[in-house]
Image (tube, rainbow, N blue to C red; front, side):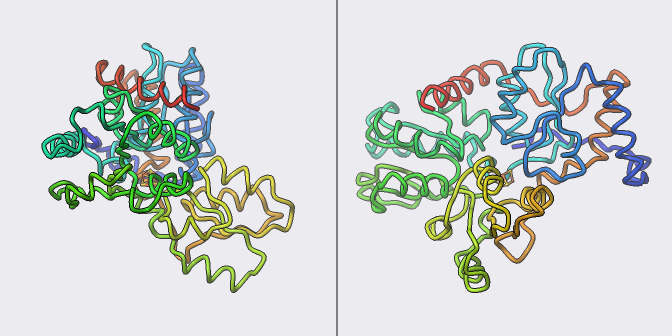
Length: 368
Ligand code: SF4
């Protein structure tokens, strides 16, 4: 959950023209150059993306930023959990700033610490776990620092969209059962790729006693999936793939593993944002692609590869609206304040939470 309200920028900022905003950002960056690093996620709009010192997926950005020791301010053009990860991995003297505090991830917010702790209590009360160590928790990197800390404390691991299968295989090897947070679909797609039978993969529905399952069902399950989802990737449907194949028989369909299993299972390929970028980049000129991921990344691929035909898989725009709360005007406001010696929108994780969350991130690096 995002803990703070975004401060009012003031009417003067909103009356600026786009070009003026971009020019003023450029000037501020030149002025503050030695002290700031601008990080941009692939789903961020192009007006901000053009200012990126580092671009990538959330974890790559957090790790690369931490390796840059001489910049005090890491400005993360992404969402809240990404800024938290950057703060966890950052050096003590570095501060992580988010241009707009409403830039959160609804999927990450679907697994709150209270609800996850309650699920564990219920599983203990009906004997599915004799002790917490009987369940290995795995969390997608798209989760709050509090959930990563919960996982780290119980010797589980974080995973990303590129290593979900590897981490899940490790967790299954380590314990009798796995609880996967917060994305049902990455969990289900990873379990399917590992060949785990469907009847051993059970959905845990938030707000229902025992996640809406019977004790018998829970006893048979190897993997419990929290019922979180990404509202952007949920919009891609199997019918969209069929339509493209009818229209363009030689099109290749590539989707992100946050898409539902019915989509992933009939796509030609699936993979993380980095995997999608590299598949399109390495394809020959004239290739045709239908891409199932966030619209800003698809539009950027179209710009970067004019020799290829690249389409969004769905007919309507699939925008991460929360990440899009970060607009150039917010970056300008942040930079103006920094130039005036004022630090705004700092995202910091409590040291004890950060230490436990770092454990779950380190576990993933050890597995990978
Ligand atoms: S695209 Fe989906 S998972 Fe990614 S930040 Fe946006 S809402 Fe969250």
